[in-house]
Length: 176
Image 1 (cartoon, rainbow, N blue to C red):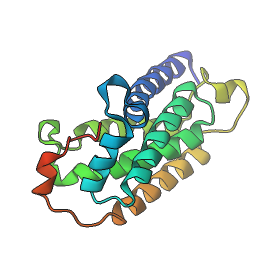
Image 2 (cartoon, rainbow, N blue to C red):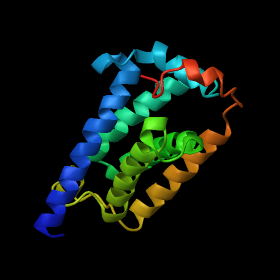
Image 3 (cartoon, one colour):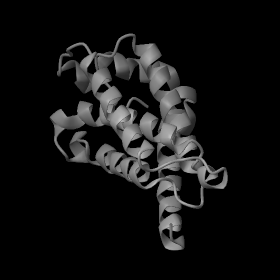
């Protein structure tokens, strides 16, 4: 892989590390004015996830761990599957609101999901732990990780209970 492509993938991986690590630690620990598991549990309950506290914990841990794996390029195939699953789930939840982020749409989630999928399909690049340890990534494992993530995210979405849309008006938009 060329130097420019490896640097480009590094920049993308680090951006995803910051953004998804931020969201995950908000849920888990309440960092960055996040509200922690208590607030995340309320959001997950309002979205129909059962059991909501466990789902909030799993989401926060998956976001945080997946961000670290993908950001460092260590076991990036696993990080790709983890973040693809979470972001597929979140994107699906926001589909009803349309694309516009100001209306709680899915534009932000879709953009991050696209970045994760791109890394999964290309591999983490030469500036990664996977490359330094000679861990196989990219084809065929990257596409498999993307497919597993998409499938798992959609499965989680289908397990949600139906929610009253009016009740959602009183819940913070992102579960932080």
